[in-house]
Image (cartoon, rainbow, N blue to C red; front, side, top):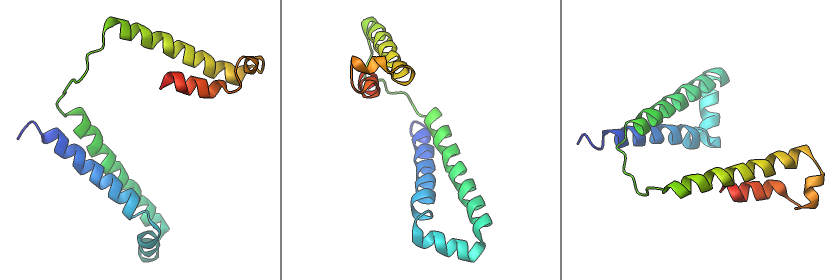
Length: 116
C-alpha cells in the first residue's frame, strides 16, 4: 500500500543502521572483518553502510504520513516559550556566574528539568 511506503523505507534504514552499528561493530565480527579486509576498508565500509542507513531513515521519515495525536492550544505555545526562556536562563547562568549557585545548587539540573 502507498500509505506504508514511508514506513517501509524508514524501517529498512533503521535495520541497516542498527545492524551496521550493533552487529558489525561488536567485538567478534569487527575483529574478523578488520583481519580480513584491513582497518581502512573496514572503516570505509562501516561508514558507507551507516550513511546509507541514515539516508534511508531520513527519506522514510520525511515521506511518512502524518498522524496528529494532540493539537496544542494557544496557551500551550505561550507556556512553552516561557518555560524554554527560563530553562535557557538557568543553563546560561550556571556557566557564567558562581553567584547563581547561591539560589540553587545545581542550575543545570533545573534547566534540564524545566526543558523536559
